[in-house]
Image (cartoon, rainbow over all chains, first blue to last red; front, side):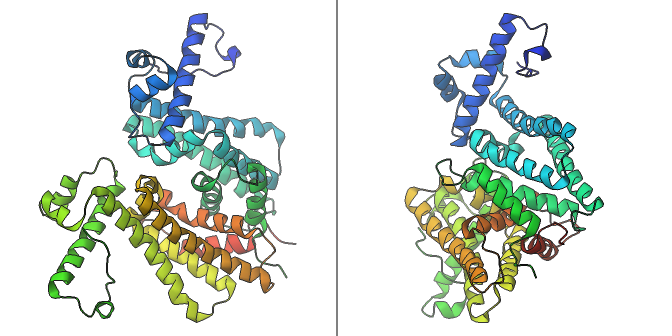
Length: 211
Length: 211
């Protein structure tokens, strides 16, 4: 049973043997395929379906994961880790609160295209995680939400934003972007980048004609 | 098997016998209880659970509904019908586009409190409806979305709104409000009315300090 999913960065695991690397790659491949299959229904997808899709036997899956619920956990973990790591990478850039929010909106909307299966699973099957795993994911969700709230608070402090309720403004931003998982289609005329720009403009300036 | 779910208004069914009325009440009660149970998991809730919760036998449920999926359909129908009927009631009021949008946001957020089970089911189990039933619900969803888009278009026309992309602005508004089903808790310090006001203010004027 996997107890940790190492970073893709080889420097993060200097002691990794070739065998461990192969196991990690296989684990990531299983999680990614599971995310795609779960997009069409978590409950209707069995570990047999997953084994068939990856071309291995079901017992082999148990070599990597203790249960379907553990795979569900890794999908959650991967998804929130992408958001958190992008947020951390930005720390050094010292963006203005406004540019920082745009980057966050771009991140979230981009995941609607790049991590479709992860997104639906993350939003719809969180409650099916075991309590200890739910706590782990909740801590990371809270961490990310606090980061967004912090950017809004910083904008209020430096006078670039109005004195909005930072909690509700964060939920408004999250709602605009996260909701994309319900309607975003990769074949549309607008890229996730275009959509982020439009949403950012509404979130910053509203739709009312000023003056 | 139910083929139509009459209005609660007795004037809408003058020919209704007492027996039909009792059947309709029972049907509504079943749909409403099912919505509450499904909130904790559509797949993990059986018709036996529903029968037990309402205090009837499982065969009696089949007197009212052909399948669990039919109940799923009625939950969808009830939810979207509430939104559409409120929208229709407003037609006579000739609200300004801005006040009209506020009313829409209040409607949606209010349902997060009054129809919790319906909301989650509507957003997460739509794809589990049979194709013909999905088409019916989709037509109503599209109708409602077109109404919202129409209000925004009217505001652009009369100069009260900026020339935003009406489709994306509608999705932004929907996202802000619909997302509430993920986080809104009836025990919070803000009412759905307060939240609608805050979201409306962001949607209209943005969070940027103007000038």
